[in-house]
Image 1 (cartoon, helix red, strand yellow):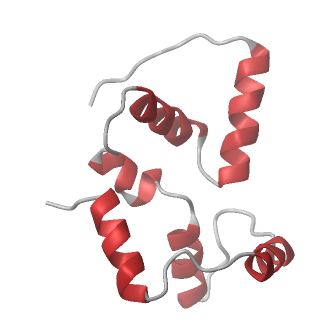
Image 2 (cartoon, one colour; image 1 turned 120 degrees about the vertical axis):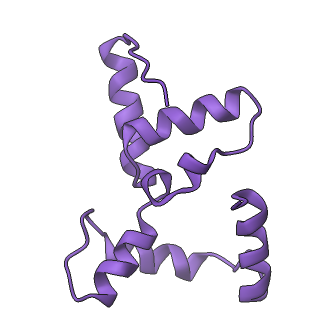
Length: 106
């Protein structure tokens, strides 16, 4: 994998940090996603790996293992959002199929 160094002004860096924090991902993962979207590409295996995903799986793993999640979790916000949204998929199988289609594994 190639490493790129890019210079951005302070306001752009701040906006990237805000969006990344809101999504619960790193700035590096956000930039990778934005570049892939801008180029019209499917998410790479790197983006689909744990490192590039939103931290939900890490939070679930931490809770299962009795550890504190590595990222801050606003449980009241999660409860509010869940109460205000309808499920996107009617079954777990539909959700899994959509996830597999988005991030194909070899």
